[in-house]
Length: 311
Length: 143
Ligand SMILES: [Zn+2]
Image 1 (cartoon, helix red, strand yellow):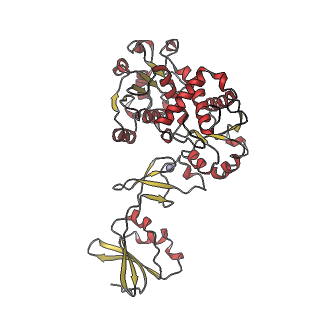
Image 2 (cartoon, protein in one colour):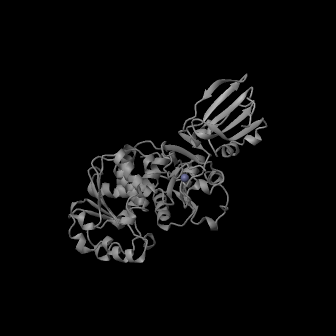
């Protein structure tokens, strides 16, 4: 296990590929042998500082700590807590970091966890900051890919839906592009294409190939993974475009029939209607398993950052 | 033309694009320095057509990072005994702390009073800076 004791995790880029691989392999053995890690974090406390509600992420972190025998405290909505409005995050964290051994922070303001980490004496994990980063979602996605496909290199991955505002997509693309031989198929309406700056960054800093498509059918037969995202109605410029386009980005069994037998269908959840319910029973649909694997990814991450003994 | 006496000792910020002198004067807090300062505006210039000039007596510690952001035409001359003894290079700074705010309204630096905005140069030609916190790009646009 690689030593990550005392480190913060604000962006997936804070981890190099060896460190990610160490987190993946511990997560995998945690998944295979959960009970042997049941007292790994005995006596440790996780503080969950959620300045905006996100039940799934919070529960996933809490479950991860409880499964390792640790304890949890925290809040899930800053307006109902002692965290007063107008207090700097720096002041808040300098008080709260004495209550816990590790902290996860979710905040609507972009960069807030980075600011907090500058003042925190204990490891701080970004649990999502506005539209910016959500690194444990990326680790969860990587673990899912690693477990099902056995590799994170030379992947052909289609991303479908809102590629403009979807931070999960941005983080995952950026991270997968660090592995050799990635090909990305970008399927989205004109208005919701991948931001030019991210495309430019990928073209300059990785060997990945980018293929833009307008229809799912163009990519489906070729890819190893189809990563679906939700398109929010309000992202469209007008109602007519929304109605015209929305079904182009919905996965149903007719479209899925064109995909490879071993392809994975992934989704960060919650879904609305972009994956038809009929897909759920298909063995390629791994989105619910993804949520489960998120707990192991977070367990392994916290065990690394805490540098707990006995591994 | 108005005559302004040369200073014996201090700093002359020259070749400021016309109209930016007052802004620099305010941004560098020159009125609060306690030293004699003159601001000349719309002075005829061979290079610029018109330019602004700032002369500060008995003071040489000018923030050149700030000046570098404003324009590459600016020159900073250090004066002693009425002669230029040093020309301080003015360049576009790689790192900028606190001189402008992040253009991203969702950025923590725009809502948290404690944090001083910090930027790293992304593209010198367009004066584009990446925010240390939200990683969005802000293009510095004066005027
Ligand atoms: Zn910012």
